[in-house]
Length: 148
Ligand code: FES
Image 1 (tube, helix red, strand yellow):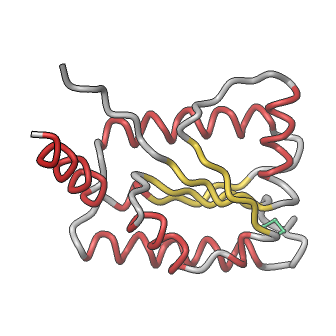
Image 2 (tube, helix red, strand yellow):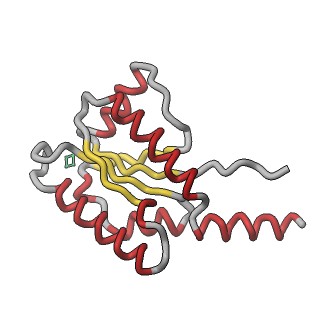
Image 3 (tube, protein in one colour):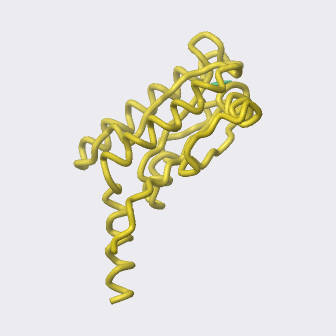
């Protein structure tokens, strides 16, 4: 029997908003998929395209960058820079034949625990529908060949 696909998701979360929203979701006991692995960053402006590409290269099926609402970045324009970088990574993915929906920029405030949980659920579901990324699919096939 084949195992159902469970996507690996990496979420780069700004310390001041999305990470705090994740905390709030936890304290409100709002459930969200365990598929989402959170990486706390001081500001989404610190997330470089290489970080996103490295996460995908290491087998993440989807990556999102979650920052402060527009105008609320503690470092003024970090979230705007991050959104620009995410668009560049999406364009790069399209160029190499990947679905650019595997990478997304999301904004929220620290008080939006529900939005955090909902985003994690919706993004996970979207990636589940897209299926494994080409890298993770190759890893799964290599694993199957090693077993057989
Ligand atoms: Fe949150 Fe910059 S401090 S995105």
